[in-house]
Image (cartoon, one colour):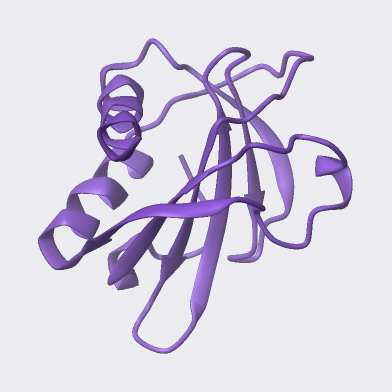
Length: 120
């Protein structure tokens, strides 16, 4: 899946637990508490999972439970909120601000969900 930027530049990724789904149409940043951080090789593994997500059509619910904030060496580069119930994700930054469908049954999507769940 394309995110409007080169994911190989990502050095740190924060895992966010999203509690408040209201107003996602107007989000400027993914809301929620940081529950964990991946650095170095761990961040590279997570970007590999992101890169391997398969796109699909949109559905209606969008109640994201997890999100990420991805940083390159200098700045926040990309934010993504994930709804594993309806197969949608919201991309903020990286040259793309849009809602997209992704296949949650895809092996890489399932690994990504387990990585989120490991943090809480």
